[in-house]
View (spheres, helix red, strand yellow):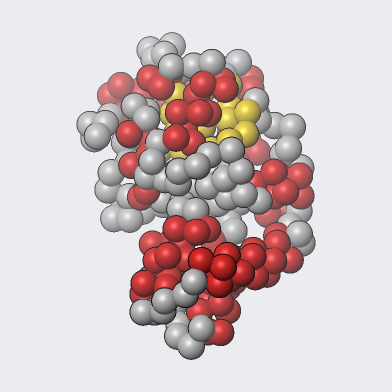
Amino acid sequence: MAQMIKGFLFDLDGVIVDTAGYHYKAWKKLTNELGFDIDEEFNENLKGISRMDSIAKILEYGKVTLSESEILALATKKNEWYVEMIDQMTAENILPGIPALITQIKALGLKMALGSASKNAPRILERIGLNEAFDAVVDGNSVSKSKPDPEVFVKGAEMLNLAPTECVVVEDAFAGIQAAHAAGMKAIGIGKATDLPNADFIMPSFVGFDLKSFLQEMPAQQSIETK
């Protein structure tokens, strides 16, 4: 192969499964209880960041000041609503193209890790039947800093015993792409170029994706320098 990529690090929400809608419903319910509302555009700001960082942004947006204990209670309440929804998930919730991509990664002998801010990542992987698919899982329970801090991806590479330059991150959030670059890794953005202008590669989904061809052509595709 014309490259030295040996591993892939995946975000979870919006990449493996689409739980953004569940998060949005739970956050919206919470803000309504606090006396204000958020829309889907504001919810984009919450993608890829931790629960507590999300609450901080929400309270700032709603101009609400609460004590630390009240904030923790809100975080617990939101998570309970969210967990009720994700507990209904099955393998049918895996996004199109992902099962085939996982098969291709394993067939080429590459390593694979999950790098998610979600503390519910193991629960979701179990529900959708992918808890044994990853060589390593780094989630909100094992990191202290949320994206765009690179901690989650740095730790993922370490657990795979790979150098950052040997890893490619798959993300759907601007903050996640920033984290990948801060870790010294290239990043594939899943979504629209207008939403992820900092991604090295952009694609709407992995449907019909040929991993072997992508890796062979990768140097010619790099149109955006790693930040």
